[in-house]
Amino acid sequence: MIGKGFRRNDAAEDEQAKGFDDFEVRLGDMMRGERATMGKSLLDVQRELKIKASYIAAIENCDPSAFDTPGFIAGYVRSYARYLNMDPEEIFARFCAESGFATAHGMSAEASSIKVKSGAPIAGPLGNDIFSSPSTPFIPAGDAMLSGIEPRAIGSVLVLIAMISGLGYGGWTVLQEVQKVQFAPTEQTPVVISDLDPLAGASNALQTSDPLSGVEAPSREALDRLYRPQALDVPVLVARDAPISTLNPNGIGAIRPAAEPLPEVAVAAADAPLERLSPPVQVVEDTAPELQLVAVRPAWVRVRSADGTVIFEGVMEPGQNFVVPATEEPGTLRVGESGAMYFAVNGVHYGPVGPSGVVTSNVELSTDSLTTTYAVADLTADDDLAEIVNYAEVITDE
Image (cartoon, rainbow, N blue to C red; front, top):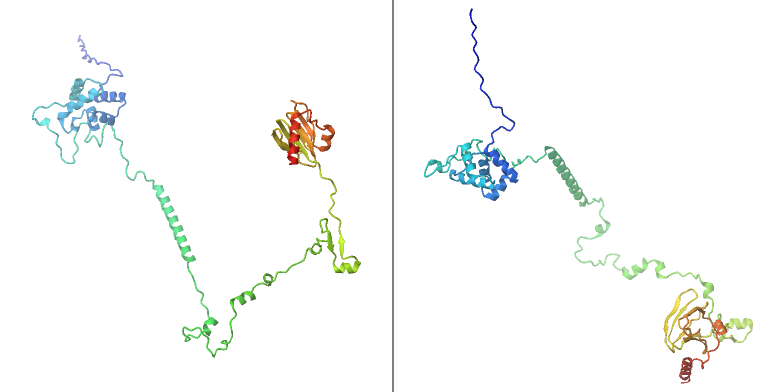
């Protein structure tokens, strides 16, 4: 019996399972993350560390070819690591491991500056030029010169320029036409010019043979008077008030003269004497008696007219008088100290208005009402009134 051989396949190599966070973190990712945590941009780092932004980007990209002098790379990397609060020696070691940079000492060629051809960019692992194609752009790209021009706006601008040019040319044409002065030709020579003798010279004197030599030209005043309207020279008057103008003020009216001679025509017609006596002016009503307010002691007084208007208001001192104006309707009186106020009607005193220390209101200021309501003042009852009356009599006698 032929036995079947069994050979076991080689066991597959065990492979380690990878998780979602199982990936390699490079130096540049760590440094960019720390810088982003601090909220700093490449330009902010350049301003604070005084290191070019291109050098900072080269450190994060592990690109030593971007530096002009390799001898400064170690110092730049350590300074940037301290700025990010990271271990300077560890960061520099990782930078050398990822970029393949090795520190050169002495006069070796690696310690000297990197010399490139004029105009040729420095080659690096992440690109030819860090400014033309940086992996992390830190300077916004500039716009092209013609990128801000809208093609459709060019046509609108051209149309606007054409309209402005057309309006300007039209206005200039109209102005030129308005300013033109045209002369209309005449077929007949003016008579005045045809009658003038061109050989007369500069003299304006008329020739003796001229039939107009003996004619004297009218003066300027005569011509003005000739063409002046007649109404301006002699005005036309129309007697519209003939009946009023015929009245004689000396023969009619209450204030005509006492003796007025009559006209001769009236004397002959009426057979009257030459003089006519006219009665004097007669007053129909007697003069209203004078009414005064007399204060013997200080008192506040207010006098109102019939329509409510205040005629007088104030404090009357002893011996002060106020003449009440004669009106058609009598006024009213209000006194603060009634015992100090009296009335004088044509020199006769009445009162007082009321008891002392009492306010009296709405006293009618008419002579009939006062003489009826109040009695003649007793001079013996009020010494102040007697003194004022005696003083007034002395002044009158003098």
